Length: 508
Image (tube, rainbow, N blue to C red; front, side, top):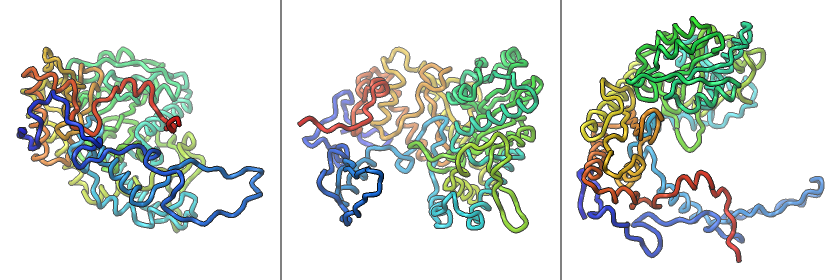
């Protein structure tokens, strides 16, 4: 058994399949079947009295729901064993690029679990929710202050929902000005996929803007495509190549001169929070992923929160509800606002509490340091790996994430996917792969500000060791990876095209 200098044991012959046990477990990691296969169909862990006979349900009868029964120890062990099969930010670095998977301070969680916030119901009388409304109002103030924008809509539930909100505001503003014929949205080639998808959902056609060789918006192509039919541009800044758009003020000027609005995708706000105010750059609308920049739980499908800040021109078109100050209390303006409503209620209260707790615990200087440390960490990763991997844009510093292409893998027989799978054997979650699409075999790494130098060194040493193995001709150790994970490599294409979404009992 050999030890890599990343500090964990590896097999000396990495291409050799990992030994299998008689039970399917691996050391202390238990093999765990589906809940339907574990539980019994004639037992339950809780004894409940029989329900009353119901003869007044319009002839409906109560049938079994076919759920497996488990005792309390069985239920606890089942979910603990499942949790051991997942990577988590509490386990190690989560380097997904353009996702900002940072540590979630436990203070935020404690605040969100306070009864006055956790037990709220959206239909409670406003007189009983004054504390929550005050928190939302203060959160809105911080978001407007940090972005230099005069208005914010809190209700959008996530980034793409925020994009929808911003584009609906833009659409309403154009229609109010008699410019409803503007039906085109311009999107850079490196944009997040949700940008063109959201624009199409609103009913716009999408035209791509070219990218320069150094990974930024091509101003000449933008100018050529702006015209009387363009409603908006959607630009991420810093962009998905991990670079700041140096010409962002000129982008805003060209856009406004053409009568269009500037929508900024705020997914990467973590790189500039406290340092740059998007409103000063000419942005008209931007969503803010509270679950990224302000450290609320991220992943697993949510819940997220994507408030949208708006310029003076778009503020009148923001959706309901608005928090308003009455003579004696705060209230909600539910009607006569903007284009209507985004959702039934007022947003994600738990996410608001977490984000506000994060803001208060950091303060203005701490939030500025968040951006500084995030950018420093990404540039450290880029510097430590640039001699063994190939940076997609080697000239100059990056922002919050370091982007590599697969040119350094030429001739090794190893692909980006192979390399990412081998990272799992070293105890690390893979970086974002093959995105952005403008970079061949892209490997996008975002360490965030919450990782220490020691952890970044551990991560970089693992990648350096793997890069050395790939260049040394050890392709087989990559082709079969992961060997040490609970499950071996899956056929991901088949799983995506023919997913098994329901369990069926085995034939008797």
